[in-house]
Image (cartoon, rainbow, N blue to C red; front, side, top):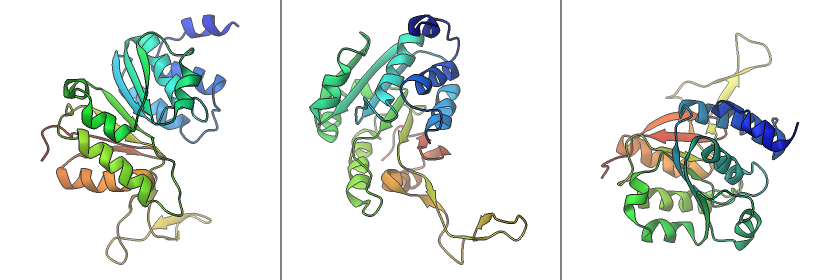
Length: 226
């Protein structure tokens, strides 16, 4: 069946995700299930989406977000300091999407604050994750988050890629071949690692709520924070 006809036949957000990963990525991708969850919670309503780290390959998240607003309405802006993604995406994205070539921290700091007040979804993925040295990526995303946390709507969903839970494990006594978390107290409690590790610490500090965590982690409740 023709690509455009398949797209027109999509009825719900889960269909957008399935369609996207079938064509632009793979349903075996670690983010497939999480994007299904994210969009299912947002219920097919028009969304204002902001992304740092434009993606025209891998997950192709920029194309996924554009597909969502193309189908259900809203706006999408993606920012990346590299020109290549913008050039790759300019003839793909729809009229309500735009790409910006700029340092994401600088853009967030200088762009009009009313824009961020009206966002439904913020996806932070602008700094490649080096799992052997996480400081630079986690600090960069903390800077992005700190520039917007005080002006977000309480329902705005903030998501950071490459941010799974990390903890200390032991062999399970109840299920062969499985592992259980060691109880907190003997060792530190499980927490968020990767690019979102410092964002998570800040979120807990200011009373934000972690909504989900897999390979992506998302939080809500960041309005009027100190």
